[in-house]
Length: 295
Image (cartoon, rainbow, N blue to C red; front, side, top):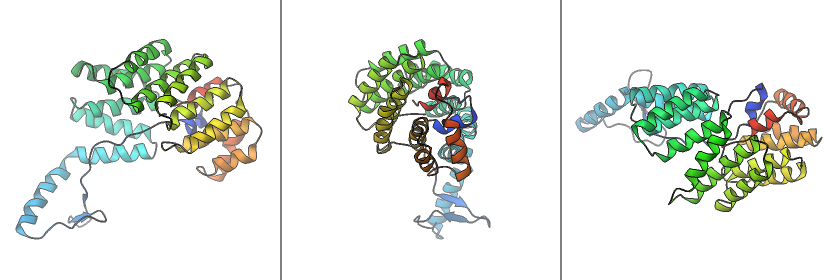
């Protein structure tokens, strides 16, 4: 599902998020000598007259700054450089303020870096231009939850989940986000019930499964948390943060060796060791659990 401002330096490792790439990027790039170069597998541009006209069209497309900004934004997201991604999506949105996708992606990445007020401002402006847009409404509800306005965000999510015609994946995503709001409010039973509904709608939602595991940990059931997070690891949309969350739970159980082995799959050895040390001492810090959950 899923992944919010970390208050502590290493908490960003725990963010669970699903980032959907958007937009299309032309497969032709400029080489150093100003000729066209192609990605592997692309057919080279023709040298005939027709090919020349084709190249002129491609040149016009490449000159469009949106092509470069879109590519830069997507690469930044893949690298989890959400600050850079927010900047590039924001530039795209400034170039095309009617583009709902640009607005949503700008706000989403602002949410990841904790710029909740800016994200809300972007979303409300976009919603004035396109009232009733589902994706914008969902992102606004997530932003409200992330910023601590739990009741307001959960109420918005509950309204959205009643929208007719939603796909099982959409229902699951919304139910998982409602569970995050309950967990942050300390209502872990209600949170777990919401995650169960999310998994009933989509049993392969790794974000909902990971959040359920973290909720068990929050309520003190570390064994159940471990089992659930291990299940989440094999879900199709599982991210590396699920593995880091499992490492955190193992460290809290005292299994530092197992935790470090997991952490080293994604982190340099020294950082993995420092991270596990950190995890071993956070059992009573609820902020970390908050940062580990995802929407």
